Amino acid sequence: MRLVMSALALSALAVMAPGASAEPVPTTTRKVVLEKSESGFRWTLVKAPVAALAPNQVLVHVRAVSLNRGDLEMLAPDAGRPGLVVASDAAGDVVSVGSDVKDFRAGDRVTSLYFKNWTDGSPSTDKIRNAHGASVDGVLGDYIVLDDTAVAPAPQGLSYEEAAALPTAGLTAWMAVNGHRAVKPGDVVLVQGTGGVSVLALQFAVALGAHVIATSSSDEKLKRVKALGARDGINYRSTPEWSKRVLELTGGHGADIIVDVGGKDSLSQSVKSLAYWGTLSIVGGLSGYDGDIPALGLLLKTARAQGIFVGSRADYLRMSAFITEHNLHPVIDRVFALEDYEAALTYMGSNAFVGKIVLKL
Image 1 (tube, helix red, strand yellow):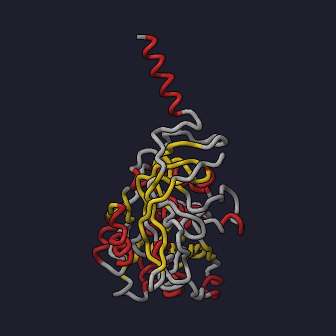
Image 2 (spheres, rainbow, N blue to C red):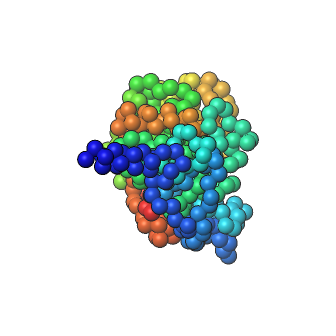
Image 3 (cartoon, helix red, strand yellow):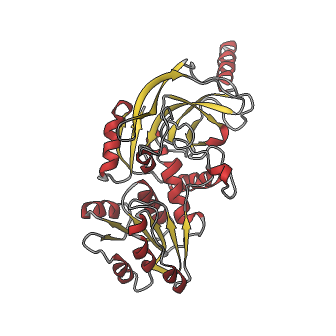
């Protein structure tokens, strides 16, 4: 019996040792790539060889991939390139690792990261030029090879679908709310809309003890985000001058942090909503990215505007620790099978969702 137990133990150690494989490594994999279309680009499912590992790379068996607004933007005529593997946010299991990889081993649950090599510190041209699914191959495939700098441990207690929500939307939300200015209990945080970034920002802000105000064009969506912890909701369709309502709800104080995803059409109202010493985190551009930020409004409030472009691997690890500590779970609106990616993209374009849309592999 001792010999049998020893043999089993040695076998288990061999499977989990660096460079070993947690499962048989296939020779081919499905992946989704950009293909030229009449109107720009579209996604197409292909089969391709599994790439050989370089010494600093890991092979990941992908279980779930979440969609982001940027995935739709890559379908524009001048955005993509034929053959580029799409999407940036995957969760799965490490199958095998290269000879120089020290931080991962076969069997680890991991997520991809948006940037290939922004590990820590301030951004630079080199760090942000390599973005998965945008400038370098993304992660939508059954088996993907990633540099070890582009992978992080998945937070404990999350499903694959929940973990896949974090690399872009989760980290963007974290940096917009708490990455550059620590939120204090009682601070007012305003989030715009009910997409992945906004809902995750709401969850982070609530966990930090903030008074959260959410805006949306849908009263039904406002009911849903109030159930997640938002104290107040404003329908910006019925209340176009919503900055006045923000001031009313806060007794004239305004919002200490605003997560602006609306872009040029919302920037003016956002600045009017700011508190003194407030922070405007510019995250997205649903109405366009080239809006004007009222400089006088910032000056008179001694406030600041900051651009948020996801974050580093070190930022991700801080976010991950916070998620585990507070037992947070990203909101998943719908899960589609990989083969139904066209329906998932259509649903993303509908803006009918609250939280994240995920493809399950």
